[in-house]
Image (cartoon, rainbow, N blue to C red; front, top):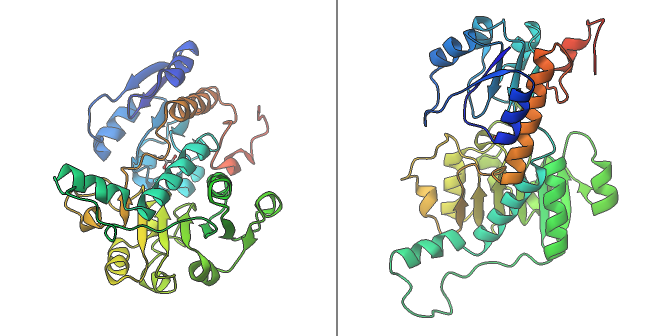
Length: 331
Ligand code: DGY
C-alpha cells in the first residue's frame, strides 16, 4: 500500500506508517502542488495524507475515486468537498482535540499582543524609532475583569476561556447553535445571542468552523454592533471575517484592535495595510505549530491512514455516514 503526503510531516507519524509496511512518498518542494500535480501523484497511490489547504474538491475526488482514505493533518476540513467524498465512499480523517491547547495559546498571544500594540511597537524599535520615554504614546488597554466572547465554543474556545479566567478573571459569554453544558458548569459561561455577543464582548474570539453560514459573518454590520474598545481575534479561518470590512472598522475606530492567525487569502501580502496598524497583531497561521502538537497530529493522521488502508473505520472520521451501510465494520 502506498500513501502520498503533500508535505514533509513529523517523524512520529512517518514512522508509524513505515512500521505498518506502507510505502510513503512525501512532497518535498517548498511550494504547493498544483491541482493537476496532486491528481497525478494520487493516481499512483492508495491513500492521501493532506497537509495544508489542498483543494480536495469534486473534480479531484472524481479523478481519484480509487483512494481508500484521505487523512488530513488538520482539524479543519473546509478544503474538502465532504459530500462528494461521502458519495464516493472515501473516508476523510482529521485531527481533533490535540491542537486545542496550542491554538488557544495562539489566540491568547494575539489578544495580549493586540491589547498592548506589541507587534507595532516592536517594529518601531527595528526602525530606530525608540527615542525616549513618552508617557502618553502607544498606550494599550488592560484585560482584567473584561468579558471574553467566544463565537463557537468547543474544545479550543474552552481552553482559551480557562486561560482568560485564570489570568485575568474574565467573564465568559458564548454563541453556539447548541449549549456547551461543560463550559456553563465549569466556567460559568453564559450563552447569548449573536447580537449580544457582539455588543457585550471586550474580546471576541472566533473558534467556529468555516461553513456557508459562518463565511463572512464578521462584516461591517457585525463590527458596527461591537464596542469601540473591543478586540477581535480570529484563529479559525480567514474567510469568517471580511478583511476589507475589518480594516475599515479598525480605521474608523468602530472596534479597537484585532489579532489574526488566519487571513484571506493565505499567505497575506507583505504590503497588506493591516500589518502596519498599531492595534493589530497578525501571525502566519501558526495555531497548531508546536513540536508536541504537530507530533500528535502526525500520529493521528498516520493512524487514520493505516486504518483506512486496512479497510477499518478511521479513529477520527469526518464523514462517519459512509459506514452506515457496512455490515462488517471494525472499530
Ligand atoms: C487546523 O488544524 O485546522 C489548523 O488550522 C491547521 O491547519
